[in-house]
Length: 150
View 1 (cartoon, helix red, strand yellow):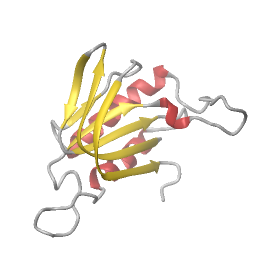
View 2: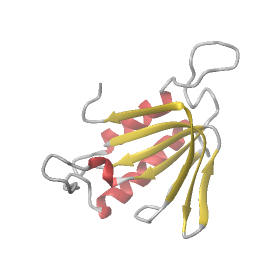
View 3: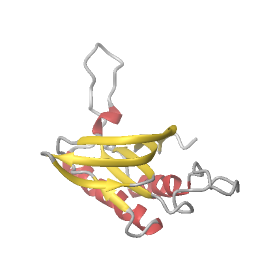
View 4: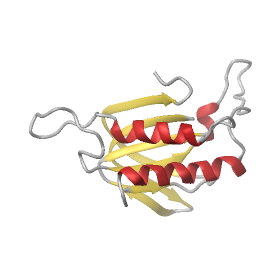
């Protein structure tokens, strides 16, 4: 499971010219699900995301997590995070989970994150063409792969 995490001032998802989700300060998480991923990957990654200390408090204390800063999270499914560009110029998505496996795992990730930030988790529209808008804060972009666990 891969996550590309961006610290944002705002982020939103629009589908068919209708805004379906929007957050204020917090994290925009692009989530790529691999066919070999399990609930263990979801649990590990959701905890890691919720506890990343990347927010600066106003008082100059230690860095805070999205939980401490009372931020929000927007999770957008993005199978292209598992693109392989090893051969040729056309990416292969063979490692990405099929939609019938990926959608329940995507929904499970949102539920898992909701345990850390009740009511503060938004989602995209799984499998839809989405317009994702964001104002990056920093910029701050972090890549996490549950198989690497660095």
